[in-house]
Amino acid sequence: MPVATLESLRDRIIVLITALTPTSLTGDKFRGSLDESEADFRKAAEAAPAGCLRRFQVRNDGSDDLPAVSNADTAQLRAKLRILVAYPQTHRYGGSAGRDRDDVIDQDWRKINFSVGVYGRANFSTTHDCTPLGCRKEVEIGTSGVDYLVIAFEANYYLDVDA
Amino acid sequence: MSRSTSEVTFAVTGQTVELRVQQGRPTAATFAVFNDFAGDDDTAEFTGTATITSPSTTVDVASGPAETDPQRLSIASTSDVVVGRKYLVSQLATEGSKYEWVQPIAIDTGDFIRCRHPLKNDYLSASTFVSTTITAAIDATWVAAEENLSDHTDPNPSYRVRWSVTVGGVVYILYSYFDLVRAPVSYEIDIDDLDARAPGLHDSIPTQYKEEQGRPLVAAAFRAVRAKLAAHAIDVDAWRNDEIMDELVTLKALHLIAGGGWKPLAYDSHSQYVTDTEKNFEVFFQQHVSVVQRSRLATGTSGGADVVRAQPFWSK
Image 1 (cartoon, rainbow over the protein chains, first blue to last red):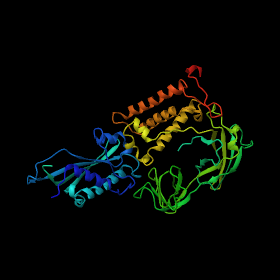
Image 2: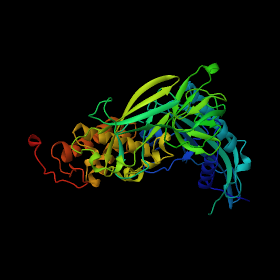
Image 3: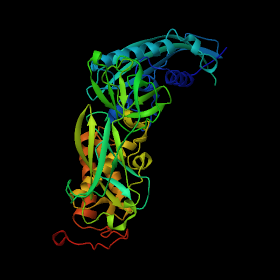
Image 4: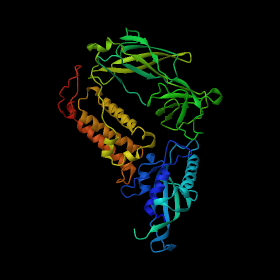
């Protein structure tokens, strides 16, 4: 049975999102956060808003739960990862300014959800095998020059309990 | 970009000076070069017919904010398009005749250019994309005559180009300026040098400058330093200390980038970082230029430096 880890799922999601071609502003691809310093994504984005367009972070939310099932070799667990994507409040989205930014965020959400959400099962196998249960979307309208697309990713996966 | 005094290099043939005509693409243009102390009715140093640079082409696929990539401008031919130069793209009369200046940051040969900023207007197929830049060839004999070298003690340009330009059937008279120098003074700063002063900058450079690694920002800083030196009556080409010049450009670049909203993570406040970078530049400038002139300057036309003794402000 293929087993995965939170680390391998996180890294797979970063690969999948980085490979996406956005629906609009196609020249500005998604770029993973380096997570340096405090790995405080919002702090880093708001320190350099002009450079954070489609910069994103994927992190484990830190929670863990009892296994749904286990045979003492593997355990079925629930992965909960949070995806944050930054959108500076600039002119680059189109003539309708903030409304166009909302549209770009929504387009990006659909792309990401299709790739890693409930429709993305085929994108996870071998060391990152999992069953994506779906993603939930929120948008945070920032007060420091940056809006955020916040995606809550959940998946079931098997973990080698002794690895 | 804003204009700087052009620098023509002494005894090098095949050089040109250029002018971007704001009125549109000329159909004809001539030029006459004068010593700036001479009048337009005096004898010119040399004259000629200006070259109207290519391209003059059309949009071949609808481009603009209504398209998926609003930075993409599809044109029939990318020949002679130069990254960093500005071009005029104009709508058809049936679209409203709106126009805007665009600056390519990347060229997909034969297909399209990517502009620094998203297009602000939509352009249908057959809209025009033209260069309005004209150039004047520097006379090969004139450029090699030592008596024509510019005077470094005067920060103002030595020569005036009087352009006679026809746009849309209307004749416009325009001026531009240049110096003839032994060697133009420049800088050798790139984003790595700035990142070494502000770690993290390279990774978070503003989106519109990332393809060029922020080179236009550094170039803007150099123009600002030139202007600052000119304010102190110093001709930038008289400057004879690379290290100090690069430090000035570095400090000014950090200040400009700070003003654009970038700050190191260690700072809580953008405004404090703007203030600090401004202060760093000004203090350094005072230490090396405005209070005492520590760096050597060339005051003659030989190219050699002249010792400038550090002197108190009141004796300068």
